[in-house]
Length: 138
Image (cartoon, rainbow, N blue to C red; front, side, top):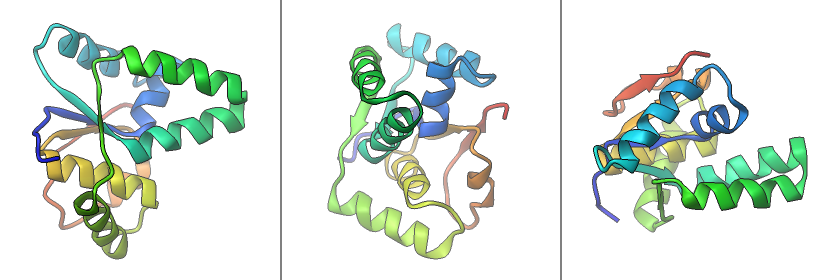
């Protein structure tokens, strides 16, 4: 997929939204803009999986199914896992100090030319990668 998006959400951003945490207000503003077709949003399928495992670990499998149903109703395109995305994430992971899932968020932002919306402090370590990041409050 080579489609461009205005924003890319990582697990941190969507979990802030679902958990009504401090960064949720900005995530909701962006979601409302997308509902009005004023911007586009993507999220890597890998990061959806990250949200699923965190949710299951903290709240159980039923909560995962509820969360996925809600996510499917959001104006967020699930960015598919392609060889290009995997290789981009692998390159980022090989050269950065961050988790593999975070490398997918960064690679999705890079490939889609979207602004990564996150509050994840681990992503502050990104160096020498050409993406825009909008920092949510931690």
